Image (cartoon, rainbow, N blue to C red; front, side, top):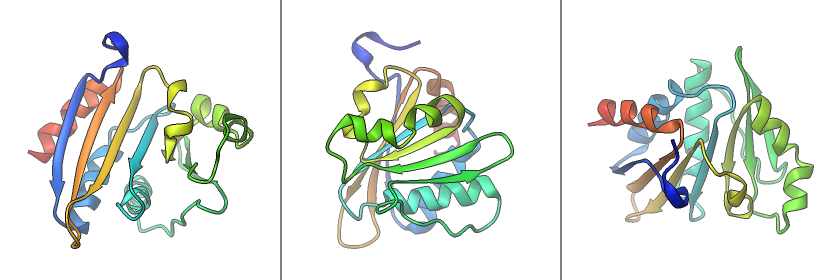
Length: 165
């Protein structure tokens, strides 16, 4: 159940020291994904959002997959047995109508949506989504990852917490 004022229910704040730890986090999240999920990815340029999605898709595929950034295409899709994962990059979009033209409503209702730079559309999501914020810590591979769960992601994020501690 959603808290008052759309507050998150569960929170993870972890330092990721290297690319292997980011890959492990993506794998742990991948086992919790189900159809109709929405994952919002926030953070500065080069903070690891697209790399995280590459690891997430590879974990879902159970093999290494060539995953391109949707920066120029704006959306790329990946088909799995139970759902299609839609990978959106909304960085260059400036109005909400353009986002709807990408088919995001279909993705939300029929697949799994992973959205980089979701700020333009975030107000649409009132419940049942995961928000991940990527922050640079230093010039090395270290990142601070903050994960907030909303709605039905709460129980699943608790399971992820148990695995990463």
